[in-house]
Length: 313
Image (tube, rainbow, N blue to C red):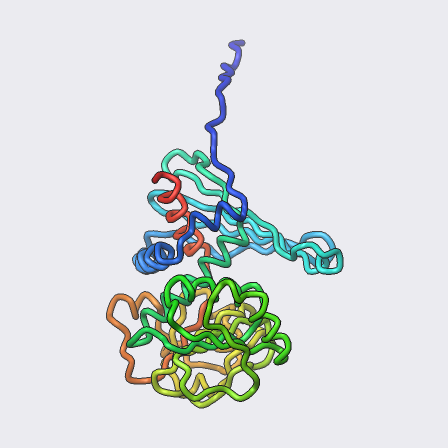
């Protein structure tokens, strides 16, 4: 019997980036442009981004598996969410994004998962502002004081530094504390109570609420961007606002299962347009717009492209 041949090869080296290094690679302007291109690729079917897999992890946690492939690269984001970590003063979310060459399968680098997620989510919102607002915003409201509020503040400071940013939290003191802690991230930052100014250009909802945190009648030239509600039982934007608005989503397939605001309001999905449609045909702004994002691994792939470009400079 002939013996099997055994080949000993050295594994190809790859780069491992921690959170700080990942952040340095992912500039918001480059992220916005990369995501815009990737949105159109997805529409043409050039990117494979299947529904995420959710697996139980430990006591009450979940492991989230989110791959995406394109002609140039592939990524696999693996995120562990463990709510019980709070009592031990540990981060709730841990994870990595593995980036590999699509032709050889060789791993090129590992990126910090939460940092990629935070930055690409904020970049999608900034792309929404560029797409659906006729002029640069002068007053932006953040509803929420958590991690995503911090990333969105960083993105606003990078792309719209002249904008005044107001913050509304679960209480006025929570908003004030957020402003104090993030004063170095944006110079034009103010806490806001329940009464909202009338001259807001953009409202960003960044909470994990199960009931609407914004439900005012739709206002022309006020863009509403819903970010936080990513499960059917979650809701940030109320029916009153949705009924009077033109509706757009970043990922049409994902939104039908995850956009709790739209699901609970019973929106007519045939009237909901995609971000790709808005980018391709220039969004008609004759009506107020609500732009809902739920995210997809394709946006992580866009971030990985930016990271690779930064690494090769």
